[in-house]
Image (cartoon, rainbow, N blue to C red; front, side):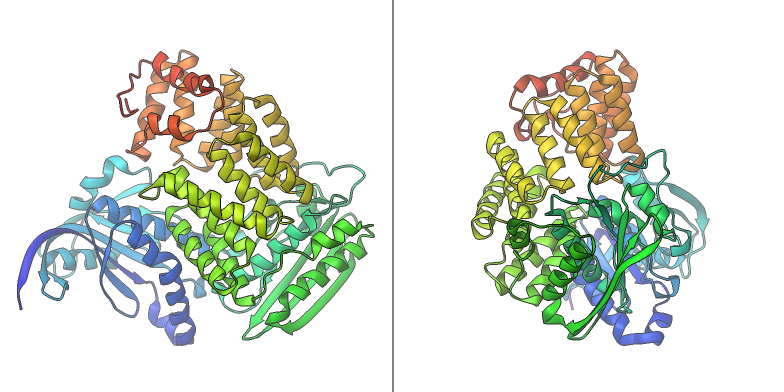
Length: 597
């Protein structure tokens, strides 16, 4: 058998407490691991150019071209696991330990790796805490300038069967609090809001997953989200967006407290139990003003009847609130259901993956949406999701040919609208694609049509604000964002970027900085936030702070390019973009031809 030696970045990972998990229910733990590998782990490894050398029941040995790729892969997987374990009891969580080393390995003819490089990575994994990543000093030296994560120097450690002590560094990506200890974000960041007057207001909480399997969470979340989508079509209601109502998932809080924070009178809560081909959905509508139960119901059906359950549940809520619906309202509530429940489940999983807004999640979402379309070629919602993934590829330069990705996204969104003109999510997809294709008038028309169909859509309002910023109407964007925040008081952090962009376009640089700093408190890895911050400081004459912010842009994304952003950002008036570059010039940041300093 021929062998060869080489230098390689080696990652070794295993499941914490695998024997205990398997002893409790081996079939279930294996099924959960298979799902994690197909949805999260394997796509992430592929994105970061990794090669899976071998797997054991609970562990993996993976080779990467560089330590940077290995660490980025590990961080992304560990971050995804923190999100997946939120609300899961500690004894049921799947958590990984990871060890990474850069060293000499022996590659055999069948591709297997052996030698000190592998052994050291394995020993590093064994000393890592659950959810952590341990790096050797050789590996850490390659990435230390690119890490914004907290790093703990563990000092020299005697690793089993390794002759000399090795200096070890630990990265703790995140921790999961027990469900009872999780709490809502501070009130100073997310203030309470007042309900829209003279209109019934409702929040649909995330339905509890009663299936006994955390991997079924996507299904209960999807049911809740679809109920929100249906109710959002009714102009007679003020409906809180999913993003805000789901903040209270796995949080111990009273219904009146949640209603007060969200600015609503009514709260819908419930549960979903999916077992084999059967599904049970329970729901109750609560008047938060007095804690009284207005209506409660339980649906025990075959899984293929899930769409009828959603329709009946929505109709019962409408009746309980004594809403008078027009024929158009009635028609909209009944439209857009898929033909096949298997396609629907794929869509729910795809939406969950797309919501991560990561390259790996985008790849997984695209695959799931394509599988749904293969089952049901007329499934417009799946086509809209597929369009969204291709547009994200264009915006983030995640594909080899971003321009082709945008064209494909445009075509798919147009097909979705032609298939289901009455579905607001299809108009969202086409509006988004048109905006990035610099067809701003058409984009605005699509969003307006979407808002006619779904007046309560915070997502469509945010897209409208983005279009207004690019169209040179920042004052209008601020009004639109205000309307979006009323529907989504726990708004996503990217909304703060839109607020800052609008303030910047108005020349209100101090106010723009406030928005950016609030965003960075929630997401310290946003290079776009730091780029705008650098320009704001430049315009205000705070040159040292401008240079510091600009350095952080490239620490986060070494490939950041002003010239690419000039090509991609669809400002109608080029001066709106030039003003952003001007702030950098004022700080003495001379741009190279590739847009870097």
